[in-house]
Length: 125
Image 1: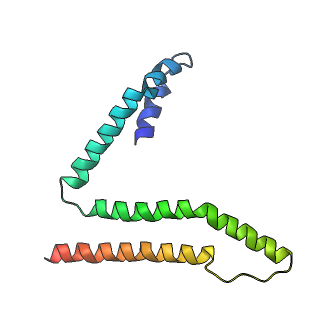
Image 2: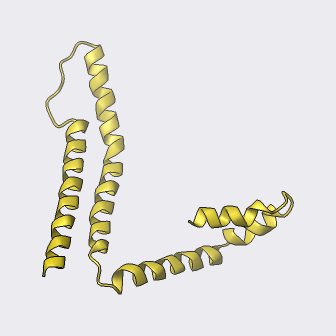
Image 3: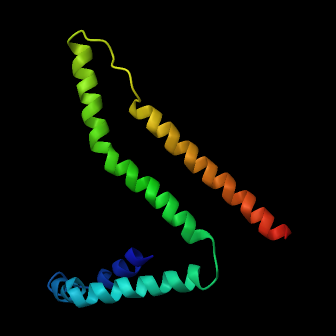
């Protein structure tokens, strides 16, 4: 939505006018106001309505963050494992990257199912 608005704003500009239009948007004050406006919108949409969604945002955000933080180590592990295979060594025991993905998808599935159950209970009660 924001990209569409930005595109519509710059669509009619000439190339010489573009830097003057974008430069104020790159200031620290503009970024602070945009972040504050986004937080106010989030608060009005989720917090004031007593929605359960912020809990899910924290849970899923934490899962995605932990996945990305563990990714470099897992890639190094897989490279080392591939190097060991090339030189005739067996596979080391331990949890592979696919096991982590399975666990992550399973947690996402549980979150979606739990959300459906919770919404059904709220509607029934």
